Length: 272
Image (tube, rainbow, N blue to C red; front, side):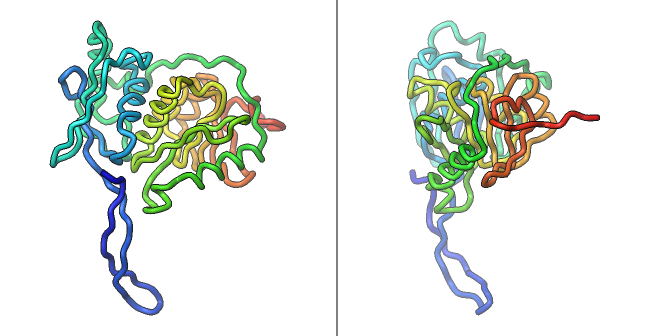
């Protein structure tokens, strides 16, 4: 299934109305089922779903390593897509600890969490090292992210998450109608490549909420860079976890909200 389809519209402009064709993003219910039990249903773009299944499993703490998933099967139905994820023996207890039963709209990343404490689950503290990036390098990374967005280029209706390093440039990019899904797909893609995000920066086309910080920290990214602003809770989580959070990164203008040591020549004034 392609992540977009064409649709007829009435295009209205200064010269009046005329029929036209637009590409619209597909939005499909995707059920993530573990060992035969549905754990979550998310609305997602029907592309890179193996990456999505793996990345969601890692980001949610259901597994810690890709080899803890025995296999992933896809079943297409009229109503949507079922991803059947079979875990290695002995992981049922971990899954029970993160049990969800939800329908997740694309704008929501915490729907259906049974315990409110899970919304602010403790995160590991990242090591103090990592690449030191300059504003021109960040501008270069965000430009590469924009140029690589095929789905958004076709529909103007998708988010992207990318991974960038100084030596390799844009290593991976994943798109989805949901910003959380895009980042989960990226986490899964990197895991399939046999690497984590510790050697570079995760890039986002969206605002930054706490669950995106959580996913970035669990992926071991030292820096998270986004085109839009963060929430206050996201900044607090990034500060506590040792994550450099950069927002409103447009051109060489940017805001640094936490751990500015990884941005060259950057200073954050202290409150008087």
